[in-house]
Length: 206
Image 1 (cartoon, one colour):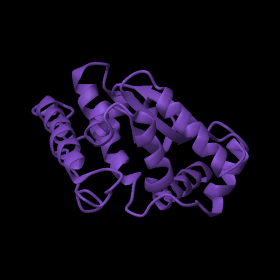
Image 2: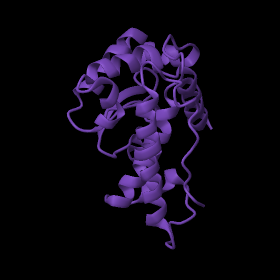
Image 3: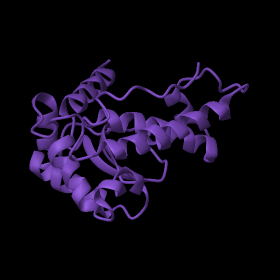
Image 4: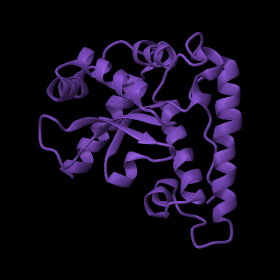
């Protein structure tokens, strides 16, 4: 099984003006694609060839091949976490969980943005579901550095923002807070997050 570069779920200019087509062309077309090539080169003619990407991420030791696989997975999830005309308000079970875990959607936005802005390293800001937590508090905000991912800690990602500089520098230069604010206010794909949360609940109940 070859690890594929997935199609973007929108046109390359679909996130403008918040993320430009030029940024997408480099971020998706160069950075993401290079991780996909690296993981395929790394697993070629080895016992890992043919394994699913998430299995690779959860089993590979630290090092270059893990970095390529994890960065491929993280980017796949990042593109899904945004949508043209995103932002707004979640509904249903996810909205109730955000209320229970953070005190409401606005409080979540503030905490999520603060974590992403405050991540000193190149890395990622995540909303995750913690299946080990019961009831209130089952949603958490976590930061990972470099290629690290919550998958390796047994957490289920629901949303992610990429805070590597290549994700925003062409549009925002060193103003990471402006990029994070645009993501939080205008780009979050709540439908994707809700579907991910529903799937996680079904997995736990099953």
